[in-house]
Image (cartoon, rainbow, N blue to C red):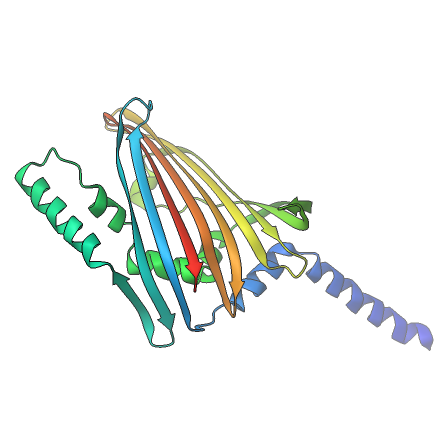
Length: 248
């Protein structure tokens, strides 16, 4: 009689162990729990710099600081008057001379409500990024000198059918470091596309490095660096955007 009851219990334990052994499923569950709209007040600083891909022609860079508050009522952004005056003057100068650069306006394009909302609550964005991903590796590691778990993912290519026709090669991967409770500590994403259009070859790469802080029911991206390069069609661009969030 004992065997009749023991075997099902062992089978259930095996199922539980298998489920717990799937770090990607566990990560999705953790991110799903971080959808809170707790009130948060912060300063967001965004810096943008660019240069020709060969590094010989750096362009003027700029940075902007935005005071933000987010809660159940929505997102509020406050730009300093001086910054807005600079942006207006820059736009006027460029209208008169299109050859002029517009670094302030360029960096403000990286500080949109959507961009800042993602920084303040990164869990939904991270969930989208790992949607359809496959687990390549999971192992013990360290982060900032402390024990952590590293999971490595292969990312699917997400482009329109029109864009897909031009692409010949794609590689996408992501590394995510987790603490002992399965909370994301940091992530690194790398993607490279190579293709050919109108008989011209092109390639583009994106590297995104993000560090997280757990604030209430939010996963805040307190530091993020994005590095983009593009070569083709007579353009060789190299752009870096660094964002930081200081929670008040």
